[in-house]
Image 1 (spheres, rainbow, N blue to C red):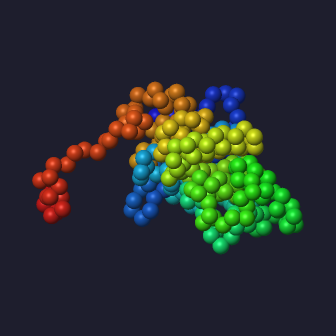
Image 2 (image 1 turned 90 degrees about the vertical axis):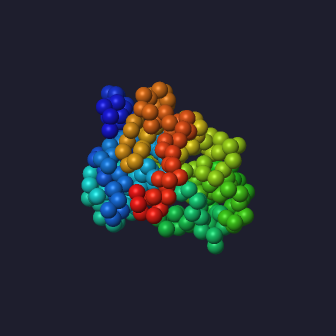
Image 3 (image 1 turned 90 degrees about the horizontal axis):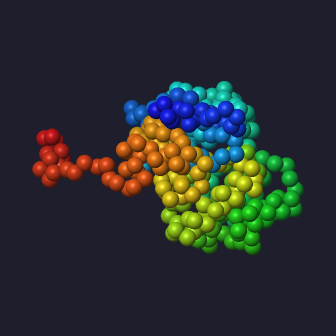
Length: 277
């Protein structure tokens, strides 16, 4: 991580304390190392966007941040708790203070939209049915899906499905909300509306929000700060202007959608296929 990235991650004196603190995170699968010595802070009340190309390690980092996996080495503190020191019950309590909106929506197809939204309440809160109905309707109103709770997930459009998943993620009023590729597969108009919703959630519900995406336009619309991840390493953490004006060539290539793949001559390609390279 560069000196500039380190300074940006730690932040100037007087800023809000971090909700997420990662130090030296390393992770991989088998012999493949995916993340290398990742340092990252996400401050209370900010929208942090994590960007990178395919295979950069974004999804692996997200899985670490939401506690689905433990790092091979390094430390991770979520909401003041060191995740590696938590037992199953303590980790469950911590997850109740977090919300996750998955890329596919991950709604249960056999349940109505309202029942999907009430599921976290049913599992983790001792509330009567009437109270859960009210809370589900309130969250559907927040995501502009009022009156659609009776529908099944298969009856929703792609954008509506994403918003229903957000309603479920926020039904317990989490302190920190994670998004996995919220704009993936959406047309530009629906994507823009979803960006506006993310901004409203941060402002209206006083949430800290972490968004993993490869959508450059969306990132520069919603982010307070942006983390650029490349080949499992952080290239830079900074404000929109700092990232936009970065002198790092790989960052500029990504922002301007310039290919970094080297052209392969037909003869060299044939030698590679036949094992003669």
